Image 1 (cartoon, one colour):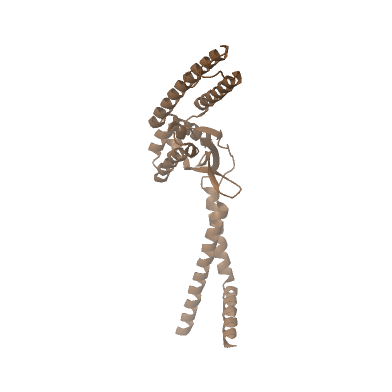
Image 2: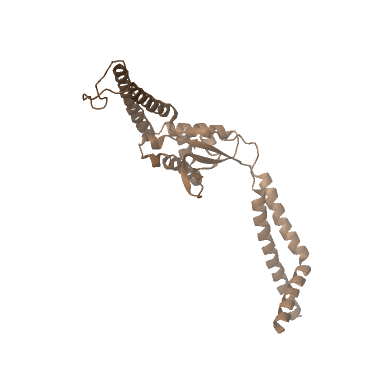
Length: 284
């Protein structure tokens, strides 16, 4: 019973406290929220956008098949740019992206992350694509940054060396396939051929369909290699950055945070004022 009375008195005191100080608490809280809104409206806005990209770096490095889908090298290269943004080293950033110092200083945030797919068991698997998130102070910089990223990847010495070797070896394979197809066609046109096409030993005759299937298989492999040579670039944008015109100001986030802090501050001030009043009354 005494516990219930004490709890009832506690709630009663709290309610009376808020009633006595309602104007002070309300004014400080609203004042804090309005000040944040005003500040966010007056400060320069920024623009948020993202893009989807892929890279041939893993293929150039001749990783195993499972690792080709992992774009960590390309992702790490982009995330290294964020380190320069965080340090405000815009001179280094401008050199890497081949843009002006003024343009690089307009980049507020740039970071990439792997895109995964989920199977029916909700297990995540790599895909050959990744997402790039970008914040800039001027939406005119969006296309400039995208072009800068292409330059950043294309002019990287490590990537250029691997890409050159990758294309050269693929061209050698294509030439070998062409020679093999030529030989198979010659054999197909030879009646009653008794040559085994893989070992060049004399065996029983083969069906012409076997030769045709081998030619089709080689043509398919050749088409894949040619496609890779043409399509696997250091970086390719599957979806460009959206040229957004909507300003991001984070009014709701900051308004809520400052509003809560203002409310707490108003309670502390109210308690201090009441304690001060009580002290004055006791002195009198």
